[in-house]
Length: 80
Image (tube, rainbow, N blue to C red; front, top):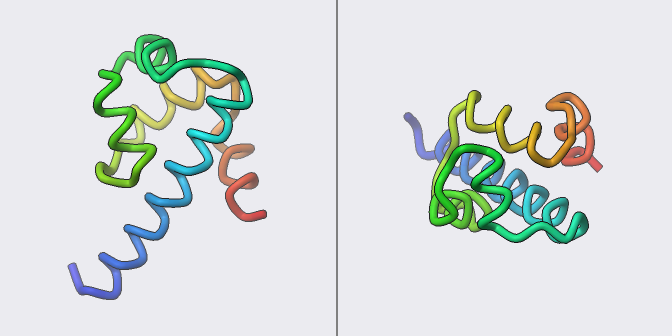
């Protein structure tokens, strides 16, 4: 992967993680609860929110489902 693509991916990870945290806190859900409902560890969720870890598509679907947000709606929220 080129440095440019890596940088773009990190920016996307930051936007995704920031939006997940924003939606989670707005819904008054703890990391532990969201992680449990998304079938991931709370440490992994924290890494996602801080853009320290990337996530698979299936993990993203589980997180969005736990937040009651459709994937298409989630990415529209990021574009704003």
